[in-house]
Length: 478
Image (tube, rainbow, N blue to C red; front, side):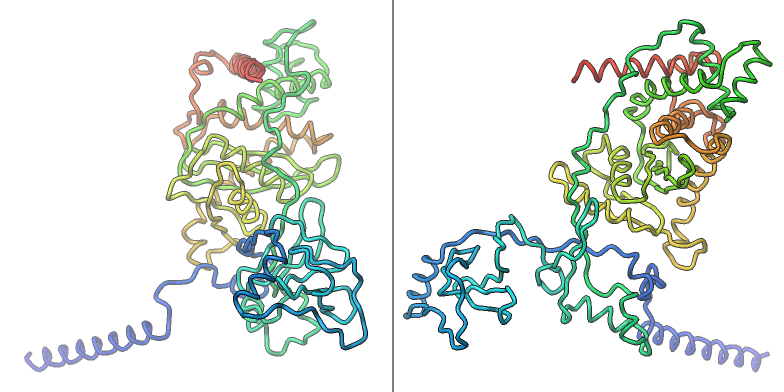
C-alpha cells in the first residue's frame, strides 16, 4: 500500500512540473488575453476597417517681415534672397500664401512642375493655389499632410502618400511574401480618411408633411380606418386582401386605393409621436440594415433597437447603403441622450458605415458623443467578441425577420416616401401594439391611453389622437 502511495505522489509531482512548464511557455510565447478579431488582422480585412481620426493642424497667417527680423536677431545675420544658379526665374506674381514673402524668397521645389517652397516660413504650395483653409489634415502616424485623392457625392477621400509612414510599412509587412507588386492595389495599405462635406446633423428630423394637419372622413368613419390598419398592419394583409376581408367579414365596401390613402395619412400623423416618444434606454444598442424593393430596385431599411427593452429607437428607409442614412438613424436613436453611460456599447455587423458614422458624432461641435462600435463579423463564433456579443446581434436579426414577415405581402413599395410611411406604421405597431413573448405577452411600451382602449381599431384611433397632439405641440413650438 505504501508503494502505491509513493508512486501516486511521484506521478502528481510529475504532472505539477509539466503544468508549471506549460504555464511558463504560455506566458512567454502566447498572449494570455485573446485578441479580438484575430482574423481581421489579415490584410484581406484591411479594407473593412475604419482608420482613426487624423491630426487637425490649424492654419495661421503669418508675416514674413516679422520672421526676417526674428532670424536676424536670433542668428545675427539676415536671411538672404535665393540665388538662381540654373538660369530659371520665378514670376513676380508668385508669393507665399502663408507669410506673403515675395518671389525672391521662393524656391522652385520640383523643377518647374508648379510646386514651390518658401525659404522664410517653409510652406509648400502649388502655383495659383492660395492657402486659406482653416485647417490641415495630417496623418496620425507620420504627421505628413494628407492628399485628397477622390471626390465622392458626400465626402472627399484623403490619403497619406508617405511610403515611410509606419502605418504603411506595418501593412506592407502583412502581405504575403510571394505577392507580386502589381497585386498590391487590391489591399488597403495607406492611411485613408473620409471628410464629409455634407452636415447630416443640420438636417431637420421633425419636418411634418403637408397632409398631416387633419383627418376628415366624408364617406367612412374613424372606426373603419382603424379596421383597415388592423388588417393591413397587424395581420400583414396586402391592400387588396384587406379590402376583401372588410367586405367578407364586415360587409364594408372599400377600395384598396382608399386603404392605401388611409395608411399614408395615418402614418403621417402617428410618425411624430413614435419618433419623439421617450423610450427607456439601456447601455446597449444593436443596429442592422436589411433589404427591400422599391419599384423593383433594391432599397435599405436601417434599424437600431435597445437590447434590454427591445424597442425600435431608430429607423430609416434609404435608396443607398451609404453613411448618411446610418448617421440619420443614429441621430434618431440618440435623440434625447445628452451623455452616454460609461458602459455604453453599440453592436453592429462588420459594415464600415457604422464606425464612420461614430466618427462623425465625435466631430460634432454641439454635444459630441464618443463611443466605439463593437462589430460582430461572420456567422460563426470564431473569436471572443463574436462569442460574447452574438446574442445581441441575433436580437436585431430576429427583428429583421419579423419586419420581413409583414413586408413580404406588399411585394415591394411604390416609392421611397411610401416605404418610409409604411415602415413607420410597422414601428408604431411593434413598439406600442404588438404583444411580445420576451415581455410575457405584453406590449413593449405601456401608454395609459392605449391600454384603456377596448379593441385594436380603438387603439389605432388613440394612436392617431396621440399623433395629432404631438403635431399640435410641434406647431406651437415652431
